[in-house]
Amino acid sequence: MNSTPTMSSSSRLDEAWLREECAALELPWQVRVVDEIASTSDALRTAAQQGEEHGIVLFAESQTAGRGRRDNRWVTPPGLDLMFSLLLRPTEPISFWPRLTTLAALSICLAIEEELPLKPQIKWPNDIYLNSRKVSGLLAEVVATPKGMALILGIGLNVNSREFPPELADTATSLIQALPSGVTIRALDRQQIALRVLKDLAQQIQHLESGFTDAIAAVRQRSWLIGKQIRATVDGQEIYGRAVDINQEGHLILSLADGSLRTLNSADGVRQVVSA
Ligand code: BTN
Image 1 (cartoon, helix red, strand yellow):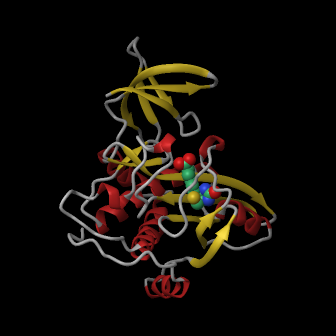
Image 2 (tube, helix red, strand yellow):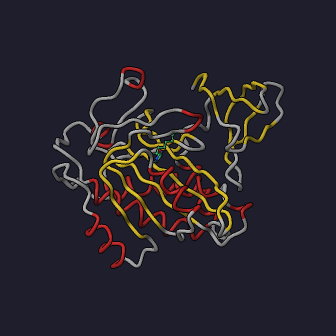
């Protein structure tokens, strides 16, 4: 971990710098940066359908129709945070692909830990929390293309935002906001953080088939949900239980009131944390 957060003005992301750094680190990414787009994930879906290859990473300074899970909108002010998507064509069987969300969540945590004096946690399955507030969200979407199935991984990471819409004011945070008191800084270096995420992602997605067990151990250590009483919806039915573990497949294990255990996969999702 760097004890001194890197500082920069919040200038535009430098595509050439990101490309050079990725090349120097032999990362499998082709970085593109645009000023404004409807949604980086929608753009890469189209790119995938047009036959583009594995490894394109599209950053946008601003999105006009950014999407989150369950038809939520993803809105952040231009130029302050990170919004990007990756086009992935994993060679592993598609049955392994749900693991990508887990590995991506872990990568974001590791990148934050390496760059800043912060302790991120994973709110299974798709969110990253700092101090019990959401700092990052993931959106993994499988798409059929003429070259076979592809996966578009969208990542929103609040870096330098200090204000949020009223409906998120009590639940959202950013990296800069979550820094320990005493660390005063004008702006965090988004590029450095972006590069670190890309580096950790490249490393972690190698564990899609083998090595996933080690990743799960790291995910468990960073779990925000374990120990909490939650409400989830499974096949349209509401269930309540205490989150007790994340299994070897990355699924959440709930202990229900009758003592039975229930396994949730990422499609089930957790609707609400009822109590700690
Ligand atoms: C969520 O928390 O619900 C997931 C949020 C994902 C947001 C990112 S921002 C970049 C990419 N483009 C989108 O339209 N969405 C994802």
